[in-house]
Amino acid sequence: MTRARAYPRAVRIIAITNIKGGVGKTTTAVNLAYLSAAGGWTTLLWDLDAQGGATYALGCDEHEHASARKLVAGKRELPELILASGYPGLDLLPADFSYRNFALHLARRRHPTERLLKMSRSLREIYAALFLDCPAGISLLSESVLRAADAVIVPLVPTPLSVRMLVQLRDFVRREGWNDLTLLPFFSMVDRRRTLHRELIVQARAEFPAMLATEVPYWSEIERMSVRRAPLPACAPTSDAARIYGALWSEIRERLEPSPRPATAARELGRYPASDPDAGLPRGATLNPDTW
Image (cartoon, rainbow, N blue to C red; front, side):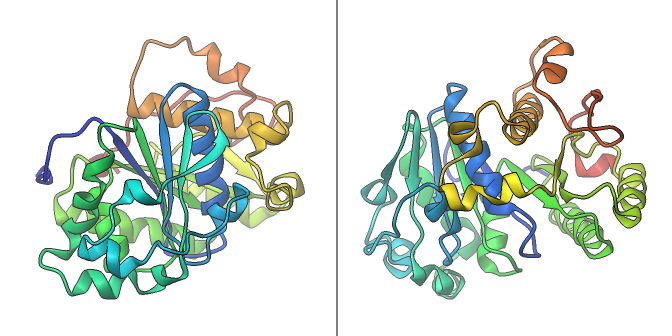
């Protein structure tokens, strides 16, 4: 079953989400949105988390007029709230503390899970990509995000609960019949010195063979991004961490927009693979819930 769309659109809506917090969602959203813009896609990053992590990481401030109630009611339009990030091709819809009640305002509307998709209508002719940095947890907002998105990027820390969450997400998408929703999980905050991490990665890749090959390690260099308040490819473009996010975005973009790109290109980006930090891995096939 294909989800009914409220209108035709060219913009790709890419959500970064996980039920669990502290898995690297915001870091992923900021770096991938920057790389999307740097690669030629006009990009908007919408910080849907009331904590405003993505807004802070881009060196911006929360928007004092970004009321969740007014947005959901249609009294404010998203283009009114857009800020320039300071990076070419990348704009920001900053967070607001009122977003903590986003789900409550959605619940008061007819067809609440379709509201977020309709709200983004005014952006479809402006941007090629809309990234949604989503809060942790399960709510009407997270369901609305899944309904609106073309692709869902899921950072996973190698723990049993994270893998269980991925199974739950896969099963939910199957039950809803959203066969056109592309799920893109990858391992985040990986420490291959830990036996548990190594074992769980092997097990999860056996169960989900189309999982993204790129892994993001648990490095202090990546954690320092919040101190620098800038995307890693912008503030440390030659660093190993920046190359890893470059490899991750290259893999994701290829899944979203297949092209006959040479296989050597991924290795040149400095991928941090599942088996050896110094070796390259082939990309998997397009991830479809029915193939898991």
